[in-house]
Length: 140
Image (cartoon, rainbow, N blue to C red; front, side):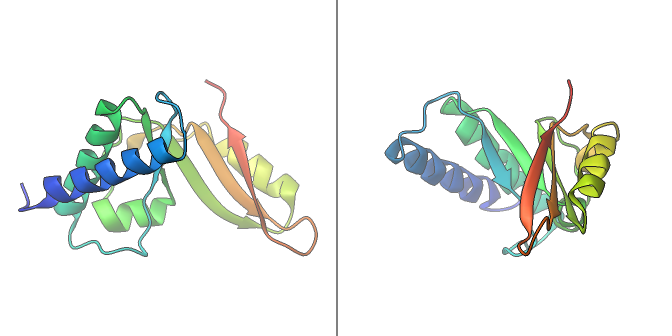
């Protein structure tokens, strides 16, 4: 493995557990790791190790883990590493809420990033003057 990658991910996980405890978040509450390219990623192998270590630490503390990402970010950061935890897929912007919802429901039927079917699909729409995030829970 990459030197320090597991330790770094473990430290992120431990910090997250402390923050969850301070905020009073109950054990068994799912934690979604937000994986975005606006971060410091050196290479895909190291990124996967950091993510896996973070997930292992959170899981050991009793928090189920999922991955939230836009496919382009996941591809760029991990070279589309397989995912075996729930996936929250970020689609992007739609001028009409109805278009975004239709796209989200369609995305529930397709593999998202990491060869996983999404659990939740997010789209952004502008019903009035502000862009608003909308989330669709996929049927199981």
